[in-house]
Length: 242
Image (cartoon, rainbow, N blue to C red; front, side, top):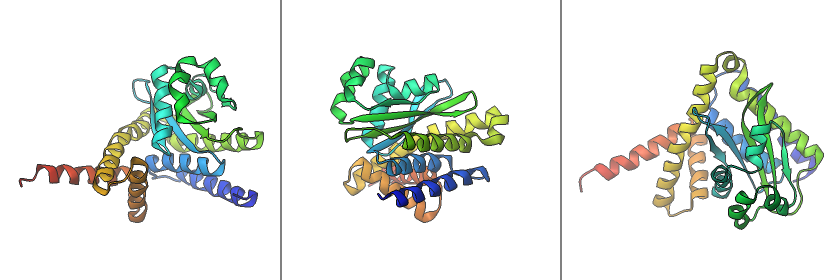
C-alpha cells in the first residue's frame, strides 16, 4: 500500500469511527471494522480486541482471523502476554523480537510459538483513567510498527474507545456495561453462525466470517442480527421432522 493510499485509509477510518459519536450505531460492527482497518493500514497480518465481561474476565470480542482469536485465548489461558499487559498497565506494549516473548512471558510463549507471528503491538483502549480493553496487532514478517505508525494506531484506539463509551455511556455506567456486554454476547452467536456457514458451504471459519459480514453489509443490518437468523434457521431445519 502506497503512503498516500494508507494516509487516505487512515483518514477515512478516523471519520467512520468518529461517526459513532452521532448516535445509533452497531458496536459489534464498529469493533470488527476497527480490527480489519487496523490490520490493513499498518501492514499487520491480523488484529484483535480484548474486552472485559461483566465479571471482569477478559474475552476476545473481535478478531480478523481464527489465528488472531487463538493468540488472544492463549494469553488469557496463560494469564500473561502483551495484550494483557497493555490492558493492565494502560500502556502500549511492543514485541519486535519473538525471542522477547519467551523471556518475558514463558507460559504464553510455550503455546504461542507455533502460530507464526513475529511481532506484536498491543494498545490499551483507554479514556482518561478508565481502561476498557486492548487493541492488538500481530505481524508475520520481522520488524514492528514505526514510531509514526504506533502514534497513528494509538489515535485509532483512542477514538474507538470514545466511540464505545462516548459521553452518554461515560456519564451512565449502566449504558457502557450494556454496550460492552452486547458485544460479548454477540460474539457467541457470531461464532455459532460461522460454524453453520462453514458446514453448509464447506468453507473454513475465516471464509465463513467474510460471508457473514458480506450479508450484514449488503442488507445494512447489524452483524449479530444476521448471525442470529442464520443460527435460528439452522436450528429450525434440524427440528423439522423428516
